[in-house]
Amino acid sequence: MSVIQDVAPHEPAGVRREALHFAVRNAKLMVGFGIVVVLLLLGLFGPLLVSGNPNDYGPRPMSPPGGAHWLGTTTFGQDVFLQFVHGLRATFVVGVIGGGIAAVIGMAIGFVAGYRGGIVDEVLNMLTNVVLVIPTLAVLLIINAYLGIRSVAVQGLFIGLTQWPWAARAIRAQTFSLRTREFVDLARMSGAGTWRIIAREIAPNMSSYLFMTFILLFGGSVLIGSSLDFIGLGPTEGVSLGLMLQNAHQWSALQLGMWWWFVPPGAAITAIVGALYVANVGLDEVFNPKLRET
Image 1: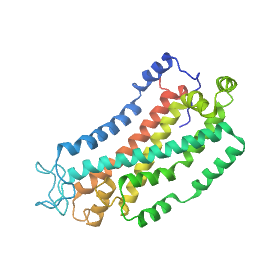
Image 2 (image 1 turned 120 degrees about the horizontal axis):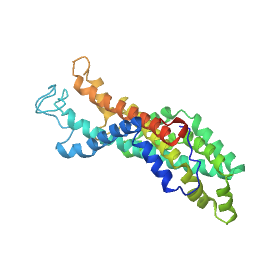
Image 3 (image 1 turned 120 degrees about the vertical axis):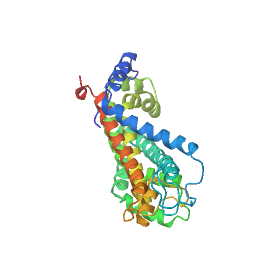
Image 4 (image 1 turned 180 degrees about the vertical axis):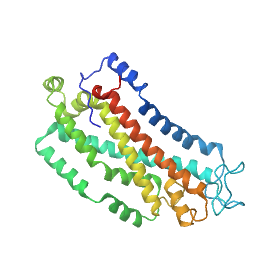
């Protein structure tokens, strides 16, 4: 992820049309986003297609996939497909909350540090380095272990509060390269304040970079959330893809040959994170003329 838009603060329509032209022709971007959109739609509308509580026990335990249960049942008769679609929704919620919070914090700190420089930059850079060296997973383990009630929203919040430092450093570096451009100098001479210059002059010229940063933060939040779920520190209520894997492992699904219990959630997590990475590579090719395929 190395591209930054080197254009005037207000892009001409031709530039946007050119980016769209290459975007729809980039196979990596289309395939990556296509996979994510399909899984997102399944998570949004799947629970509307199959009614019931995903954690309710059923009369047919350990049933393989079939007409009555599309993805079979668990050792307690729970419908795996019902758990899967609810788990997809929870996984995307963690990604959006965690990635969104990390992106907002990272952008705010990165923009201010890169634009202001001096003592402000030193203080914010010191704060970023302190959070950066903190063992994130260990902190999340401690916090989750001592929370009486854990929810998807709280999990996403703590992930976002610990995942922003690398984004802040990357945005700070890009802001340094833009703050001396002519259009920023003109805005400064006109009397515009710091936040106005950042919002109207610097940020728009980094829009593609910021979007790609959010994609990586989103994927990282999904992975961290699934890891916490798998080791038993996920939400105390509801279901997620990581919790499905944790339950399948706890109740020996592999040893019992119940592949339908652990393969769908594992494949979905891999597909989401892998598709986001592939889409990010595609975006880099779209926004960076040197990487575009002719």
